[in-house]
Structure formats: C-alpha cells, structure tokens
Image (tube, rainbow, N blue to C red):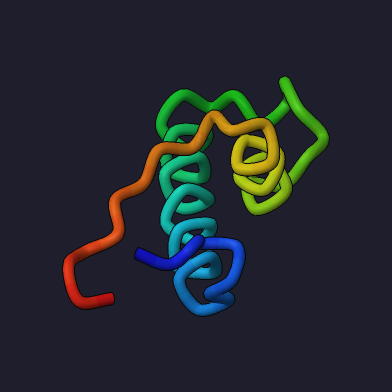
Length: 60
C-alpha cells in the first residue's frame, strides 16, 4: 500500500471530499462566521494534524 503523501491524486481526492463535508456542515449549521478559513484550508489542517481518517481501496 502506498503512502497517501506520495500519491498526489489520492491526496487531492481525500482533501476535496473532506472539504465538501466541511462546506456542507457550514451551510447546514450556518456557522461560517465562526472561522475565517475556507473548507479546503480546514481539511488540509486536519490532514496535517493527523485528524483525517481515510481508507485506500484495494488495488489503488
């Protein structure tokens, strides 16, 4: 299994999916005023802090 940091495509997909989740939560809860960071920045921070969980499908 490859390291996600070595696979830019996989890393991009994981970050994009998490950013979409964050964006949807912000829209649903109307909490945009609580942070000045965009969803992609928040997703990247979560990844760097090791807070993002992801599964690499077999054969990827």
